[in-house]
Length: 198
Image 1 (cartoon, rainbow, N blue to C red):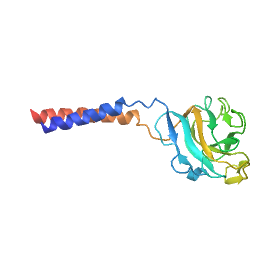
Image 2: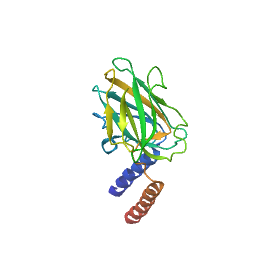
Image 3: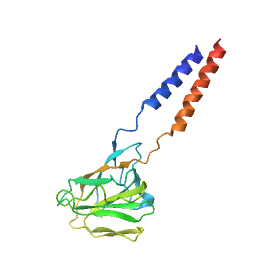
Image 4: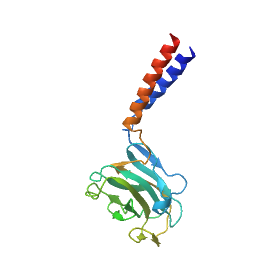
């Protein structure tokens, strides 16, 4: 009887693991204050497609950088919306895994907000990237980036959202081999428990 309960519990765990689909896109909300450079960038640590990053510029020279995965460089886009305290003027930057600038924008979105459109990263490989949002007149120093030349004008704070396509979180999705191994292990355990109960 005890073995049957254990088997039922393990089977339930396997079904739950296999039944959770990573296909549904989700958002990442800034935790605390995102860092400003790749070594301290905030991981958008969701599993699967990432459709938005939600955060806030909380200081007059705040710079928020996030570590993301770009799964489809041809389709990748990043479009900002915001409610900043003065004139909604912000900038977006995308750096590769080594900190080299691969795309940036100031005013191609609504009003004075930034937008990086699909096709701008064509030719770049899929992989790890860093996405940064800051105020106008705050620009990266060095290529690869080593710091920021920050002289925002006007100084302002407020919430923002960056809508994404072609991106994913940096969380880990179980490999098919891992799931197969779990199923095989459950099959072996089932056989063992049945033989023992007989």
